[in-house]
Amino acid sequence: MRNFLLGLSISGAFIAGSLFTGGRPPTADAQATQRWEYHCTEGFNAPTIMERANQAGASGWEMVGAVASPRTHGLWCFKRPRR
Image (cartoon, rainbow, N blue to C red; front, side, top):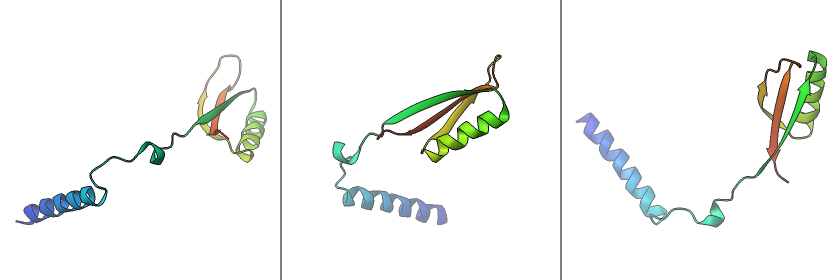
């Protein structure tokens, strides 16, 4: 009985939400596409990497990945919303 009431409550919430939004998906205006710009830099030692990462962060960049490289300590990539 308890599971039945839980399922009924969830179904009711779903139906109420569909009625509230009119059952239509959001319009294109409501779905603005986020655009990103990317920046990558190589680091040859830990102090250089930290300095570059801190500078990027202060400029609004967010680190999204790093890849090891045989000739450097890595390639560090950042992104931020396109202005």
